[in-house]
Every structure is written in C-alpha cells, then in structure tokens.
Image (cartoon, rainbow, N blue to C red; front, side, top):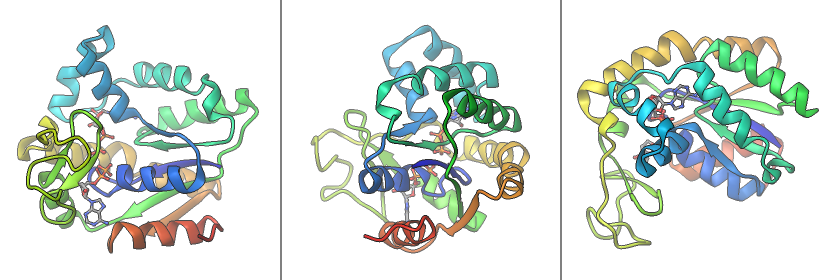
Amino acid sequence: MILILLGPPGAGKGTQAKLLASELRVPHISTGDMFRDHKARGTELGKTVDAIMASGGLVPDDVTNAMVKDRLARPDVGGGFILDGYPRTAAQAAYLDQLLVAMGRKLDRAVSYEIAQELLVDRMSGRRSCPKCGAVYHVTANPPRQAGTCDREGTPLVQRDDDKAETVARRLTEYEAKTAPLKRYYSEQGSLSEVPGTGTPDQVLATALRVLGRTR
Ligand code: ADP
Ligand code: ADP
C-alpha cells in the first residue's frame, strides 16, 4: 500500500506513520527525519537545510524531491511505503505523481489528519524525542516512564529546535499557505481521506485502518 500522510505540524503524522508502518509492514519514510539525520551526521545536505529548518521554512522543492527520489529507488519500497511530511507543496505533489508513473506504481490514499489549530501548539511544545532511537513522546499526553528519559534507550530526551514557540508560528503559516491546498489536489484525484487526529493514537489508527479498508 502506498500512502501519503497529510496534516499540520503536530497533527500526529509521525506517530501514526510508525503505527501504520508496523500494521501494514511497509517502510515509514519521513522527510523531516531524513533531514534531521543529515544534520546530525553533518553532511553537505544537512548543512544546507539546517538554517531553513531552524527558521520553520520549507526546504527547496528540488532538494527535497531529489532526496525522495533516491529513497524510493531502494528495494524495500517494493511492497508499498508511507510518506510522512512529503509532499508539502504543489510542486512536490506534481513531482511525486510523475515519479510514481515512472515507477509504474499508484498512490492508494492520501490520509489527512484533521485537528483544531489550538491543540497543535500544545502538541509541538510538549513533544520530546530520543536522539538515539527517534522515539517520540509528549510531556503530558504520552510521557516516558521516567520524566525526560527514553524508555528504550535510557537516553535524555531532547526538544526539537523548531518546536520552540517562535518557530512553531512560522511552521503553521507555511502549512496553511503551501501544504493545506494539497488536500484539494488529492480530493480532486479521488484519493483523499480525512481522519480526525484527536483521541488516543490507537483510536486515530483504528479510524485510519477502517478508512483504508483494513481490519486488525
Ligand atoms: P507530526 O509528525 O504530525 O508533527 P507527531 O506524531 O510528532 O506529529 O506528534 C506531535 C506530538 O503530539 C508528539 O509529542 C506526540 O507524542 C503527540 N501526539 C501524537 N498523537 C497524539 C494523540 N493522538 N494524542 C495526543 N498527543 C499525541
Ligand atoms: P512536523 O512533523 O512537525 O510536520 P517534519 O519533521 O515533517 O515536521 O519537518 C521538519 C522540517 O523539515 C520542516 O519544518 C521543513 O523545514 C523540513 N521539511 C520536512 N519535510 C519537508 C518537505 N517535504 N519539503 C520541505 N521541507 C521539509
């Protein structure tokens, strides 16, 4: 199954992508995670995107598209994949369409997580992650067993630079201006499904699986 996950920053795309990936046994491809990995490894790409990400802006389409093209050339996508945080602009969506045609593949669904804007700021400001394994927590909604420490690794959790208040506002504006219009694009293709992003992660997953015609 080939899925795109849409939704504003903080909607729960990453959380849902991990759950769906394990349910559907397909890889989870997060462009945000890939850029953060480049930053952490200090690659040229990491250096290019560092200031853009810190400002809450979007990485240029050509850079992002090239990275996704390389990722989709790997053999593990044969049984399908979940794109989390890509596409984010009309140009990326058009590029992906053309890439899928070239691969002889077809998008199954674009799932859009719907959530009131007021809740997003709390979700982003409370988000903490493990720098070692990438596990994502929330200080109140999904806390680790021991405050500030990863359950799996025992590593101190960190806050993403771009989850700080100044940057969050810019990311939300970027989403409204550039990414929200993609809902119409996929709706016109007949592939959009809207899923409420509220409730527990498991409830959100159950709704998405129902929409996708999967039962657990
Ligand atoms: P996104 O990838 O869309 O930015 P995340 O999956 O990283 O969103 O979730 C943002 C924050 O909200 C994280 O701290 C996460 O633990 C928390 N979160 C995710 N899903 C839910 C949910 N259903 N209810 C409450 N908090 C959630
Ligand atoms: P969130 O899960 O909160 O929506 P992501 O982890 O997906 O955030 O993205 C973090 C940052 O990485 C974005 O604010 C942007 O700077 C960059 N980024 C991620 N995906 C894309 C994309 N498809 N196009 C452009 N920039 C991207």
